Amino acid sequence: MTSRYEIGFIVTPEVNEEEVKKIIESITSTITKAKGVIENLDEWGRKKLAFPIQKNLEGYYVFVQTEVDGSVIATLERRMKQMEKVLRFITLRLDDKLKKSNKLTKRWAKIDRIRKKTMDSSRSEEKESEDFTESEEETDATEK
Amino acid sequence: MQPRSNAGDNKPPKKYYSARKKFCAFCKDKVTLIDYKNHKFLENFISETGRIFPARVSGTCAYHQKQLSKAIKRARQMAMIRFTEEKKRIS
Image (tube, rainbow over all chains, first blue to last red; front, top):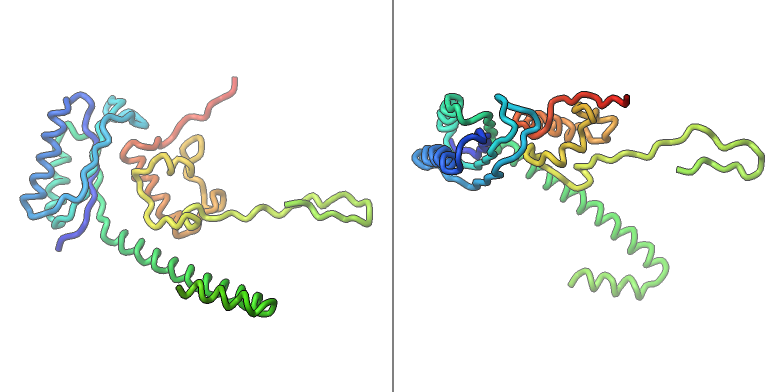
């Protein structure tokens, strides 16, 4: 079973950019070897941390969004724990969250549709009582 | 809200007022997924000392408050948002 994941980690500021690239490659290569797909990779670069971690005031932020098997994520987590250059990491499963958000968007769309219908019907009724000619023109415009 | 004006008699206007109704900031913009990476936005829901505002203060609905608190905690874990900060004392 493959599902969508998001991995984020912070690398120490002491390392050069080449070493950061090596770490990213080691993670991406393990994903691609397990027939995973890397959907998005964004590097924030060096950023100030909100609080010092192991006496480091800065950190190199990297975020990877992938679609792989769950067992690969477990191995990656184990490996990142052992890496001394990685200060912090986080892994999230996005599948259920996206499902929930899709449900919400659908529900909101439905509410909007019903609200519009009621608004239109109320408006048209008002106008019909006032003028018959205007309401007819409006309905034609909406149909087009 | 304006206090109710009593035009006829000389009574002072009523002291208590009805507070403006708060709206969920996420329902208003139709946000469905609160991302922990968007830390600048999350900082609006944090007090000076780093506490998460309760839903009754910020006005967020229960559904979004649940997601928001989780997102803030994740952002803290990744050192984007501070856990606590000492109160600035006026000497």
